[in-house]
Figure (spheres, rainbow, N blue to C red):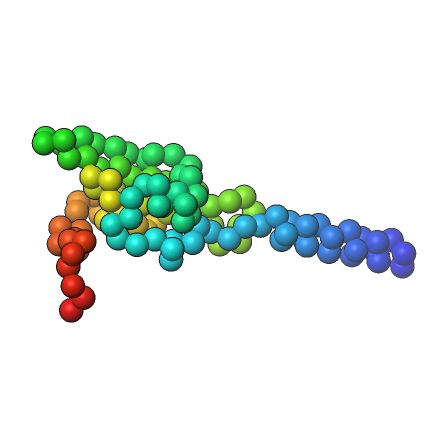
Length: 115
């Protein structure tokens, strides 16, 4: 009886300990279109890595930052943040990126009014 109780207690301690260490995924709800890299770092932290970068003619450039889920996350999600010329134009899970610029990205204008 004592062994069973101590095993249950040890199991609960382990589960609660891992649960306390578990962080949630990156809060992409804090992102906004048009944010600059420093604002993104302040909002959701430093990226795990810069997943891709490209320099175009005319000194235009794009970058994709990757955010990995923390260890022991129950529902792990990887997120990418896509920048064009130093401004956020898209974010989401890697499967959300089609490899080409979406129509909404082409229409991005920081001065555009809401319809």
